[in-house]
Length: 458
Image 1 (tube, helix red, strand yellow):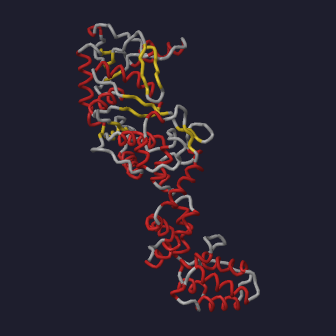
Image 2 (image 1 turned 90 degrees about the horizontal axis):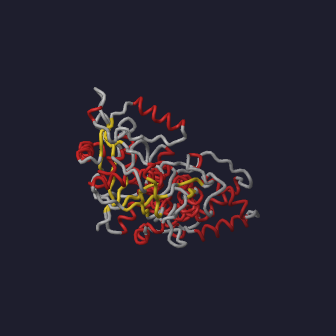
Image 3 (image 1 turned 60 degrees about the vertical axis):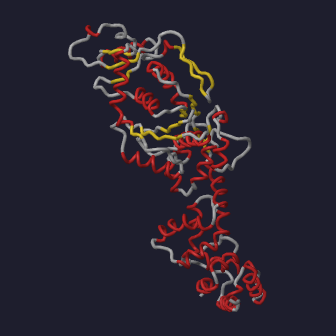
């Protein structure tokens, strides 16, 4: 059997953290088994579904590098197929027409609420002759659900879960206008797409009981279910904006690497021993549903920051330059010339251990691109000291411009001027970087180069 998984978001907004993790788990499971990972856009809610949301979902998956197989399926294009299945069930008496008016349904709900019961349809048209239908009323089509026993799902994450069939009502397959409902569309599409494993959030578990009965009524094979516990904030409450951004696109803008984001999302509810930093290749080799936890995962921004820092340190300097250059250019309002890029690249080994995000890295690297313009030096920096420092640095041969020779020259100037090294290093750092905090000063000077260092001192 070829494993086929699917990610089926509703395009009513951007790709959020929970959806991204669901997509990742489906992608990993399919890749682990050499199967297929499919994408279905469940856009049947025409009032809330937008093309902008579809584009945002595709963009988020692309940024996370979760490539899907084949073309994305738009569920709305398959309404005739969905309706045909419902009409087939109607013809075989596995479904029936219901002529209840909206007023009757509302009275039914009100009565159930008053009596403390769940507001489920009472089946009044289940065995009734359609000839009794009131004139001019278009019926909905309802599935004829079992009324005794239990519906049982053996879930790969939740274990065996069951519900008494008396708690499940005869739900609607086709609306009065002939359009299919979500329940029907999902079941038909999963079958037609050949989906073997349904991996999704456990907020869909209640849907699974109804869908399984519909699947069996259609004569379709029941897929393997794996319902994932939801994601909470670090405080245990439902994940919301107060815990940090909830949309994947925001994390890209904040400067997180897609590989780090995949690693972090994978560890939200899945584990392999004590491993924390896991490459995508290793994750594919290890990923199994049995390793998914049974309780809600907790989203911890501090852990994500730490992990992103690990990935930044492991990324080649050239790649980091490629990613931070646009951020610096955007902030400064102009492009970076070749010398500026070269300086940033030379300084990158000292910068990347100090950054947790690409945005932070760009901010720390900006002084390499353009000399600071608004500085207050103060302290020991006087004309005589400035002249002595410039003369000493000018004397270093171009081919010997290095951290060690620069440090030797600066120490000698400090000794000759009878001041502490720190009293000279502090104003130098401010002049060269615009800040009192930077990578080690002599490394910065080496990365800036002799010409740029002397120009900034001048």
